[in-house]
Image (cartoon, rainbow over all chains, first blue to last red; front, side, top):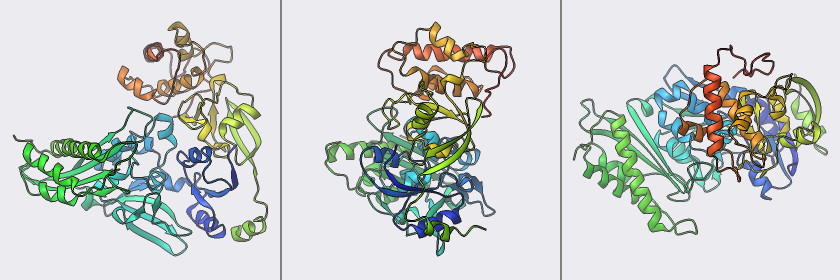
Length: 295
Length: 191
């Protein structure tokens, strides 16, 4: 039995917004794999909840006329990994969410919840940054689109306003066309573990595949919120993909991080890991995008 | 059209803690009044006496409470009972045939000595059943990933992976059509 003051169930986005507006103290409950565990830990006791688990319209993955890949916020990790559109246009996102927990958790965990929980270790977070994802929210004042780079306010707090629900994660054609990516999760265990740190990159090669036309490097747990690494990106942009260039880019990427010493890992260790992960992810992304790594 | 605003305001003082739900449990349609705060684990064990669904950790770490809902495996401890409305739930009690014949996975666990204390076994059998019902062939490494949501303190996992692998081969080479055991397939999941 969970210690809840009330559970209101929404069957549509409209109903969810109404329930949230009528019960301003209520919080959103999606898959529950973060929140229900936190409840067991004695957090959020006596809280009211709006369960959005029943909103099937938020479980679809589609592509619109402009070629924007639209991932419903309630899509489970398993559904995302198995989805043909994700595999074709943003495969590293499917790979990233396939590292969450274990199979049972992946069947219930939603991408919306993974992002909105607001922790930088979320397996979908860094990859959404690397794909320039845009969050779509519906609320009493209508629809809002927030680029993911602006969505995280601080640890455990994202830009959701009262009455709002995240309905989808969007990846535009400009963001995915020509890009290939890679994700690396560093954790103590091979499964059922939260990341110590994560890295996700996407790379687009030039038409002749000789130079890196663009690269996006994103980190999780390199600071209080997930971040991109513009110095690292600038260091590889327009360059030939040599081993040196990749290493230099990975080194430069660390300038954009703000790791800390904690009981889990020291700052020096985190920076060492993040740099190596960036290096490996860049190499993998370059190869997948059709480039060749020169000496 | 229901004016939800008025409805919710009038019941604001005492939000309803109970809901009636309709679902199928091991092939039987049931109607149940449940506390909205109950987990599926609580409901299956306490209201249906389906005690094969074990309370190992109650936080979704150990997999002892794994059940199939519409053919997909979930940890029942972090799955609210109300979410199962309109769905098909299967536990270990529903794996054997009506005549009592164990399914391929169950028999394989016995044959391969994959059971010691047995506490993790029901959950593992549900995950094994899910992956067998996909009809796909998996490598041993893939099987280990697919079973990664389960903890076993007794066996060291080796015989468990053997049992699932052998069950998979048996299931795939079996000349019987899509039924999961020889005979009726009344619990066939639609994955």
